[in-house]
Each structure stands twice: as structure tokens, then as C-alpha cells.
Amino acid sequence: MVTKEEVQKVADLAKLEFAPSELESLTGELNSILGYIDQLKELDVTNVAPLENLNEAFEHGSSNLRADELRDSLPVEDALRNAPKSADGYFLVPKVLATEVKTSAAQYTTDEEEDELL
Image 1: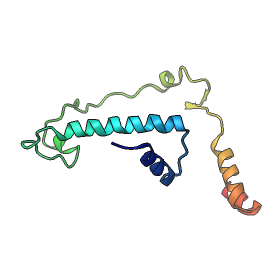
Image 2 (image 1 turned 90 degrees about the vertical axis):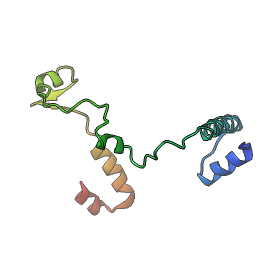
Image 3 (image 1 turned 180 degrees about the vertical axis):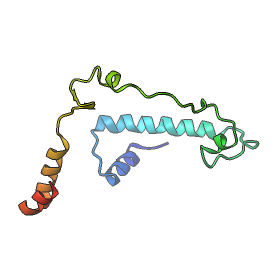
Image 4 (image 1 turned 120 degrees about the vertical axis):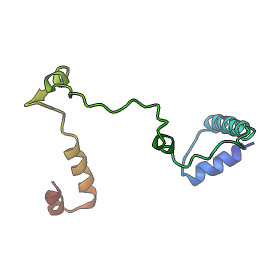
């Protein structure tokens, strides 16, 4: 059983802040999760081979996935049909990266260095 004080200690270590009501809720949720884990510990897994890699089952041919098959791609016109803006076979989107880079660069560089980045 996890106490509210233990949840607060972990939150402090993770530099997280929670309101008292949130701590109560998180404590209950963590105890619920740990209770579920305790239920899993009760299962008999003596005849179950350990699975070290999720892809192991697929490597031995027991895949439930469909077989790969070559198909035509979606035509560009169909892909762009509902796009708000497009031109020359491409989606047009607002410039956001340049603004973010400029804002970030301004914090750590001089004007000359910033111009070189952009």
C-alpha cells in the first residue's frame, strides 16, 4: 500500500507539484495499479516460456498479421482533395518551425550567429 507521503516524495523527486486533492487521487490510482500487479503475481506461469522480445513470436511464423502485398499508392489528387491549401502536388502548411527556431536561437545566440542558423 502506497501512502500519500510516499507519492509526495516521488513527486518531489520528479519535480512535480500536485494539489492535495490530486495527491489523494494519485495515491488511490497507484494503489489500484499495485493491487492489479499483485493479482498478476498469483498466476501460474510455470509452463509459459519467457518472451524477451515481442518480435520473437513473429520470427517463428506464428504471426497474426496480414501478409505484405504490393498495392498502388493513393493518387496525389485524392490525397490533396480535402487539404485546406495545396500547390504543385504538395500540402501547404503555415510556417511554424522558422518562428520556433528564431525564438529559441535568440535565447542562446548573438544576432550574427542567429542569422547563420536561419
